[in-house]
Image (cartoon, rainbow, N blue to C red; front, side, top):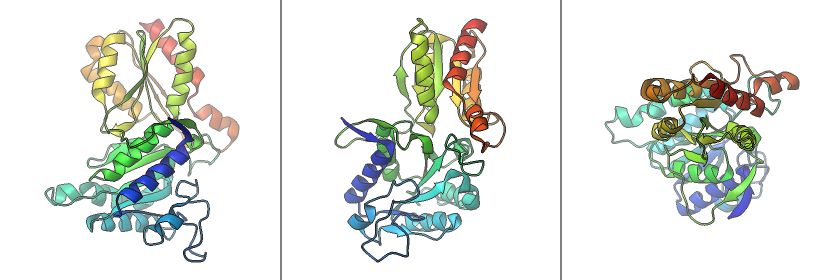
Length: 337
């Protein structure tokens, strides 16, 4: 095992897949260092978060493509390249900007295979940074994976650690369907063990990070880190939990959640997105429709409030679900049952 940051794990995945398949190309704003540099010699930070650093000197301008500041152009270019036989990895910089290109995603990318009777493939990976906690304000801090997860034809990844970030990205690049790949900004510098050699993380298979008998806790992305803190603290008191990291929201691993619920009878879902039409609501609905007979207490949802993300640091800290809130929700479901 090698210890690296999530940023480096994503970078390594891109390097490996571009070396493996010359049809893999990368595109986005400043992914190769800006169009104003000297051709063939520049290599700036590698996008706003440094994920694509080093790709240009290795693979050249034909495969590491700087684009205009136009999300609709980026997604349109990626769609066309995919239909023409390439495997584009496009970066939208911030997930909040997806609305500018929503028709390209919702009505085009997601539906090509269906509209052409399965004869057209759209192997696009659309990377985007998401999440609050970095004091980036309301237009750069949202967690919008529920919106994209609701669209048939798209696959959605939400890694929480470096190993899954690399494994899921490699899987996404090799997939013949469009994949939306969310990267939480607050996790780029998180370090973790990454397996050496070739490996892929399959879609639709959640990870069971902790095992327990009292409560099932389901989380995703940065909230896995916070849920782990809460679960480990409660374990010192003898309260043990199954902790499930979803890893992908489409496809969604319903079976792992339901199997755990059948053993514990209690469910807490932790989701940084807003409460209405959230992944937390989806998991709660799953428990109500397919796991109701197993429930011995009401489902607890721990989410952000139904407001835009605040800019003020003090308010943003209150906005993001905390380990203390997760702990309180676990205690509540034990008390209510």
